[in-house]
Length: 248
Image (cartoon, helix red, strand yellow):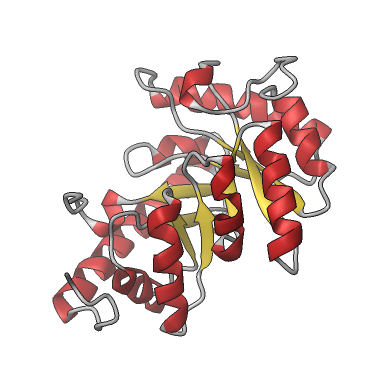
């Protein structure tokens, strides 16, 4: 097993620097094409399956935000990164089971995948017990209305999974702070169709919650289209870090 406390090899640091330069260039070009200021878009480095050493190296290269999607991996990695004296802003971006809420609130600065009233309540209780400041939350929204894939449902009266009930549960929670929305383009949808639909949902959402300005959308393959339609945060893994190691 690799010692994740060991410094990143110079060749790996060079790989990361090159990947970061390419992604930053893509973001700059996308912002220019959309008539947006590059400063409006934050890149989240999605580091699942990559070692803590890569996170430390990326922060050294200027990355401020890091995303993970499995608590079992993220909790230990965040502790290793903190032990190295590095403090990125950690985003939890995967589907989250309520029984993991107590663990996640110990290291995450943002949870992007809140898609039910029950999960919001679990995070609120865990935040009140385990944090000294509110937890920033994004409500994950379903673009295609398929509840099986995760995401709160726009326009639904479902008391647990409707977008409005979930948002109201976050707003009413002392331990949470509503930041905005997150979404993943549905399988089989063209990115433009997906993000155009998301932009409509986000505009209506901000009319009700003007403080909720974050829109997390777009990944390595479709970040340009997400930026065109208003993404403020893009989640980039393989384009930044290379192909993922095989899980053992």
